[in-house]
Length: 176
Image 1 (cartoon, rainbow, N blue to C red):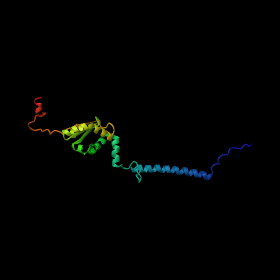
Image 2: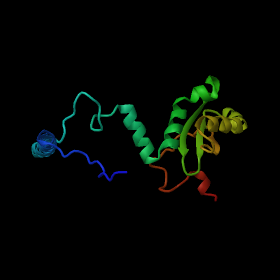
Image 3: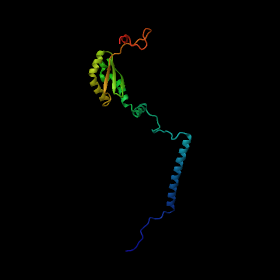
Image 4: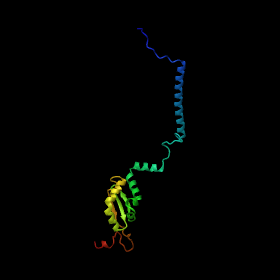
């Protein structure tokens, strides 16, 4: 057995050293150029310019912007109920929709207020309310509508004239 020294990688020659130095110089120049370009654009006040490809600075489509706003503000349930009010005839049927109109939705109480044009239709809707609540919750998500409050037709507008006392509720307050 002979003692031989372990073989080492050959020392880089002049040409190899030149290639390594050239690569390092190119990378340093590229880094300086990128920094100078960013400074120049910052001075112009524009930052990077938008090009042909989409990026985060491009304008959003209106539908996407509205959906993002609804999600950020937590308006999903009121927006969904508003959609139901727009599709009321499809949900309850044409005949019922002719006589009963949704007026408002109380988000805290989860109550949908519906006004009917006659007491007969109001009674009919009160009987159908449980099925209607189930159908609405199917469409909107469980628990969105807890109850439907049915209102009958509104009375005539109160008249205020020269013979009415301020704060009076009419002839019933005289005897009462």
